[in-house]
Length: 610
Figure 1 (cartoon, rainbow, N blue to C red):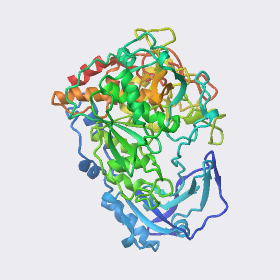
Figure 2: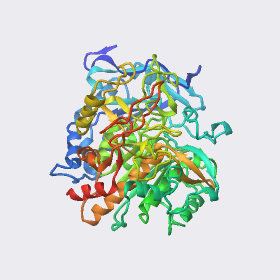
Figure 3: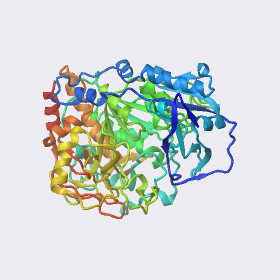
């Protein structure tokens, strides 16, 4: 079909295979009404240059961040984009006057029967079911007229299957043996969840203040010694450090007190400031490591290392729907609400009994440092960077493989038996700071160099299949390929030497002592590394604010311009996909990045900037 006015149809997005763990169902009622969301192209011209202006240490506009309204205006779709898309919808017989225009015209939402959506998009919809029982409506491809497609980022629901899955209570078989890394047990979990090891008796715990067992048990004191974290906060009331959790994951108040009593004098009874998003609530009843371990880990170490700073907890999602990764971004950015997929993301107000009846678009201002597990839109990170927000994200626990140990097979499926490396998103997004993992070598002290993590987990790292190398990373990666070029072929990873590499930096991620469900356990993962780095950045923000300066915001350009502020890691690798992965070498590498932080050097560096 061809409209002379809008031109021939062109495939806009397509997939060749059904994703792993999904199966097509036989029946789909095509008279069912669904909201079709046409996400309009944002005005991104010059966006990266604007981010570099406020983020590069040599820029005269360093740290001169934008406010939320200014960012929204910068990225709003053009009038031409809005007019063309609306004219096309009218030409297809849709009453756009009764459609929903989202904030700042970021998207057009048109309710219609599935059969009309098929006609509009030249698509065939089917119902698909995940192994966890989640049902999803999708198509294998869709097309847009030539004159329209350049004004549309993407349409939902269509080819996307990145559905949020809810963690379940682990069976006995799913409780990991800490001596045997056996990927796959957590592959249904969308976040990169930490791994649980042995339970520790009170008698086996390292004493508070002791550094004698740091190669076996990491505590806040071990981390302070490793990275030189010695600082008295001065701007507590002005500073902010945010941690994001997704219902049904929740910290247990009693666990925070158990940990604080042992390792944080004066911290007993302290709680994070709850910023509830779409009905997010805290559970007071211990349930399982999968449901409590992540939040307990994040908050226990985030609060310990930044004490007495009041940590903010963004708890996203009610107990009925839980939360998708978009739920959190909705609460920070009105325009991003338009990007939600009605078949994937929770719908609020939630009509179910006990569901949250509000709608939290743009409800909260972001804190200065936020830890993310996953997001779908890389440009949202760019926008947060413009607002002075530092985003840190764990790089993954399966080496060059993706979450759950999945690699890419010859047909493009994710599979544990695949041979192509599977770089994880959003670590591959150039606008976040990706955090890998290290460990103290067995038998060594905190005074000795660390190595790449190889106990239970392997530091995620590699090169993006999607995002090009950012300018701030070019010198580091050029040096890496010149002196340490891997021998793997282009069939195994993206070796064009032009791709975004990750992680950016690392921190210890092995043998963390964490109070979970009333007992102490050892915990492993880049999920442990990320809050350590976030805490360090929060302390640096405190120092800058006390000196009348602005928050550090997007830090990567500064980090790569000053690699001497890190402890270079030159030992270890990150196996996966039937290989030994990459190797930690001198300089930046796709195992541990630039290395681990030296707090005194980073503090001096950022205080020297205006």
